[in-house]
Structure formats: structure tokens, C-alpha cells
Length: 283
Image (tube, rainbow, N blue to C red; front, side, top):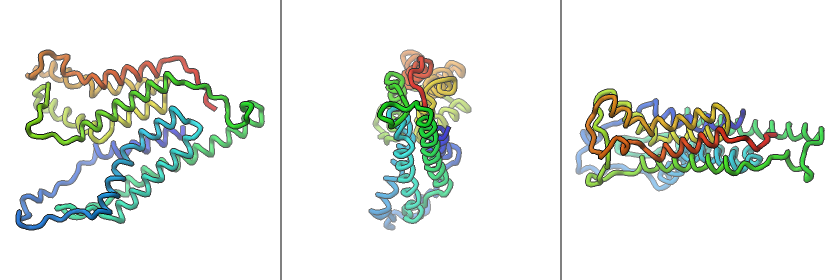
């Protein structure tokens, strides 16, 4: 329960980035080219770069802990959440200077990281209480360190692959594209179809699909995890479905080329991990 709450708090900033539009000052229209454009200090660059990577990686770290080091999730998860929270506070105290003015971190995002930290701490308290109960009734292992927790390596490996595929797509979406780079195969969608496609691309760039994969990794099995896996079919199949529904032209040799196959593979792995027989007993 608390692990899921921690993960939901960790992925909320990505969702907020999708829902809240960014601001643009259009400084090219107001700043003479002869004027020296202001830039951030070295300290601000370090703080904001580290904070950005921390926010991006936090859901991945929490998911990997839940899969491979569940007994260490409360402590290590709280440490990771606290580190991102500190960087978020620093982004407010140390503004990032751009030609559009000074940018500061958002307090709303700090609340998300604080919620993730609190959920990890509550998970630790809950784990300690349950271990104490199991110790009282004699169900701890012989070493007396923790309840029996058989490995679930195949399922963990499947969801780890899902995470890395989604994270790889996130990185690819944020890489700059040169004017001479070949965009490859695409459908020339129009109107609402193109607007939805743009929102889906933005969701990929801000890490929404990484968040979906991370939530599935925490849930691991059952209908909720299966739903998270199937959700990854949305970015996988939207473009070919939209192309067929709108009869939009495309520059591909066939409609199958419009499918984003990495997401198809990720969804398939998530489905396998979700429906595989459970072989791990939670404490």
C-alpha cells in the first residue's frame, strides 16, 4: 500500500508536467541580438541538472528497489526521495537564469517528493510492525532477520526490462534533432489526430510512460499490474490506428512500420509478468 503511494507521488510530477503547459517569453522578439544574453551560474547548472535527473530517475529507482530489494525499499527509497526533495528545495533557493528571466522550482513538486518520502517512512514502520508480529508467532526465518520471501526472478526481470524500455524511449524523445536528421517513417496526421499525437509525444518526453511502467513494477501482479502493462499499448499503437481511422498519408512501406515496437515488447513483457504464477509471499 505505502509503496504504491510512494510510487504514485514520485510519478505525479511527470503527470503535472503533461497537464500544466510551460511558459514561453519569446525573448527573440524583444531582445536585441547585440545584447549579451544572461545565463545560469555554474552552481545553478549543477543543481538544476542534478534535480532534473533525480526527478526522472526516482520512479525507476523505487521500482527497481521494489523488484529486487524489497526489504530495503523503505530505507533506500526514503533516501532517494529525500535527495530529490533537497535538490528541489535548492532549485527554489538557487534560481536558474535564462534570457526570459529567473526560473525557480515549484513548491507543488516538493509536495510530491515529500509525499514519496513520507510513504517510504510509513512503509518502514509498517514493515517493522509486521516483522515484530511474525517474530511473535514464530514465522521468521532461522536467521531471524526477515520473513521468508522466495525470489521471483523471472517476474522481476520482465518488469525490469519494461522499465528500461520505457526509460530508453524517454531519453530518445528528449534528445535534440538536427534539421538534417531523417525522421524516418511517420503518418501525416491532421486536426485532432495530430493534437493527440503531440500530447502522446509530450507524455513520452516528460516520463509518463516510465511512470506507468514503474507503477506496474510495484504492483507486479494482478489486474492492476496487467492494466499498467496494457496501457503501454497506447503509445505503441496510436499512430497506425489514427492513420487507418483518418486515412492520413504516410511515407512508410506499410502500416506495420508505424507501430512503436519497443512499447509492444514492453507491454508483452508486462503482461507475462502480471499473469505469471506468483512465487513470492509478501510479509
